[in-house]
Image (cartoon, rainbow, N blue to C red; front, side):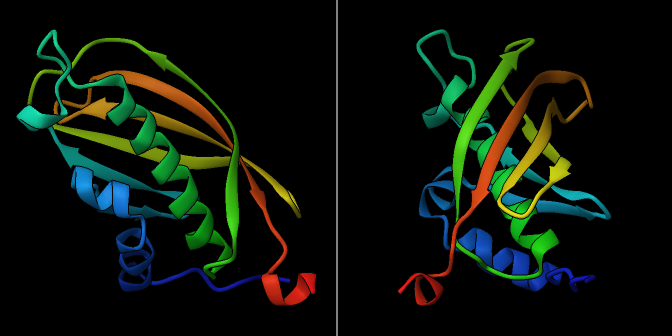
Length: 143
């Protein structure tokens, strides 16, 4: 059974409901056949004590990119949760914009695994993550 993907406007609605991502300024950058890209501008309040983008921002971008991409590909706003995430940091970032490009390696009935490539506005890789999500039963289905 083939599902209809969410539109860009619907993806933005899903993204707007992730309040922490909104607080960081995460925005939809592009939709792809197999996932999506989100972006975030580097701001002073997102830097660590070394004046570089805090690693938590990278991790949030990876988690948000995978989660929102899952909604996009499922064509719905089903309940999901992160099960596991592993992230590698390649280089620090002090300014500009950061992008996270998610695409799914496996889409199962309940477990979905995405790879998220994180890069700067010069397209230099700054990290990568593998994020595992679980699709949960709808609350109405569980009762």
